[in-house]
Image 1 (cartoon, one colour):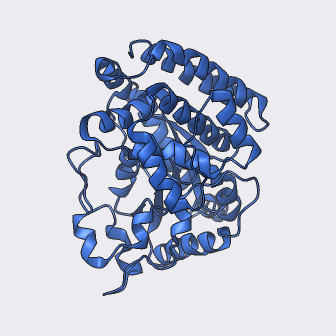
Image 2 (tube, one colour):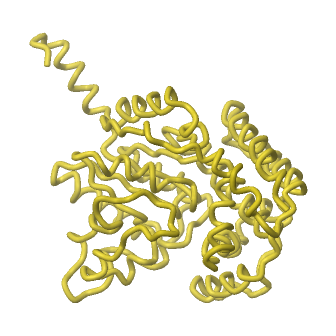
Length: 359
């Protein structure tokens, strides 16, 4: 540190300006876990995995050791179990993370915070404050937060909000192939569930209609009952409809990111450009003081191209109209500036190319 008082003051101001944590807003199969793992690897970080996951409602201390990547997850090897960082927030003989409620596990897209949000804010604040109190930087990896991103941005202005963006064709293909190969319908069912539980919100209803999504005919009487109905629906869902549902949810999440992130992480570009990986690291350093190494990112676009022959049950050529409709929907909303809209347009052009080979 400089001996000059003015310099010391400037350095102190810069230090105070650093964000006091990171919220990673990601989607299922977006490679968000890999991004989180690179931050978690830093000694100064405490990395919380999926703080809104309904798994946390029943988690016990005895369960933590088994919470590791499976052969089918596609996740990177982890030095510690997924939920290791929740140990201080669990009690011996008691299930459930302190402050967590199952209702947190469903994303919401309403413009104003719902009745559950004060409890959600208190829960996340407790995780943050106890972590920073021990001299560590909290980093959260969410898959259920994008709809609530503006709420969280307002409630947690002191943290860095980063969005993870992957083109919809690659992101969908990752979950669709898991269902084909391992009969795991979760990632096919999730868009139907989130859309159905939020369909009373006008912007969600509009996205459903524009993308031509057919939802399960069952009325959502409760979150749990509707989740079960959607899993059953996903097991026999027509492939084109499953993709339309995914794109509708994807564009809604992108719309919320347009209005709320401090940094957008382009997963497709990250695996193809070492310069971009270095620039992304520098951006994290500038905003949060953290310096994660992204140099080992895989080219996930090329992986999607190689898997095209395995994508059965979807007429990829007909998806161009869905991509076009979703992009028009985004451009018609307030909050998406021209540069961001252009980035999304590039993602749709890439998605057109990748889905062309699907049959």
